Amino acid sequence: MARRPTPPGSPQPTGVGHVIGLVKGAVPPLHPAGLPFVLAPLAVAALGRNRKWVRRAGLASAAACAAFFRHPPRVPPKRPGVVVAPADGEVALVDTAVPPAELGLGDQPLPRVSIFLSVLDVHVQRVPVAGVVKKVVHQPGQFLSADLADASEVNERNSMLIETADGRYVAAVQIAGLIARRIVCDAQEGDAVAIGDTYGLIRFGSRVDTYFPVGTALLVERGQRTVGAETVLAQLP
Image 1: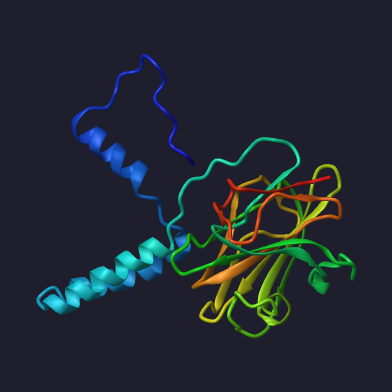
Image 2: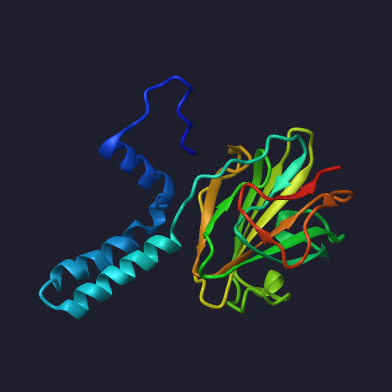
């Protein structure tokens, strides 16, 4: 959760407490899935404390993993009918495409926005719209580079279908990439989800496709950078 501002008239933190507060506000927390990846190199650094190169390598690896699995707080917009980006990254495609067959949305092309995540981006995924999870389906597949158009069809993926309160369907599809071999999805069928909630992640380097109902107004362009849970991708009809 985002840190709340101190109410007017309240005593302001001073000294060490103030410094600790600034550090907490600047350093994002770690997603639980990244904890083993940080602890393992820290253990190596501790065991090799008498060898400078081992200690430095362990600490550097721990820092890199902590950066990869960072889980910064986000504040989604409250406007009705908007769909936010499910991930940080670069908009790779703004087009129409047939959604994954396992979602049962038919064979007609739907508006789609694809976001490519490099290894430097935040890799947790956010719920793009509030509603109820109707389907969560994992589909085995290949591990082509996630920035290729064919990746949506042939790569390993995890598809989530959300029904909004007014009966609209929005789908978010996590797609594995060339070096992304693990998709994590914590959402389950029947879950009530809020816009901007964290629901999963992909490691390391990946892509997330969002499918919208016909008539949706897409509000982003190819090449634009997105901030998960905050950048508005579209306005539902």
